[in-house]
Length: 116
Image (cartoon, rainbow, N blue to C red; front, top):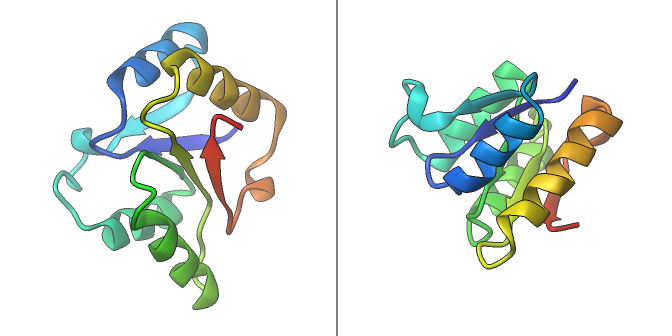
């Protein structure tokens, strides 16, 4: 099963929907770790070390940092960038589909925008 990390600004409603509808989901919120307030590059490095796909709304900078890691040959388990204006339910539905119907290697080195 996929492992996720939600960055500290990720929509809490999406997290609640995920935890309610998929109680076994492996999801950590960055604000519940020592990374609270950390730079995006540090969060991506931690996600790589932990094998966690990062969930974020920060399309402006995060995708560039993710692709920098990939170009440098560093591990990058994947990033899902959720549209802040999209329905929380639509984002959660897509993440549930991804979490239950795919494997971690399918997302490695990639940045995807949600909803799909």
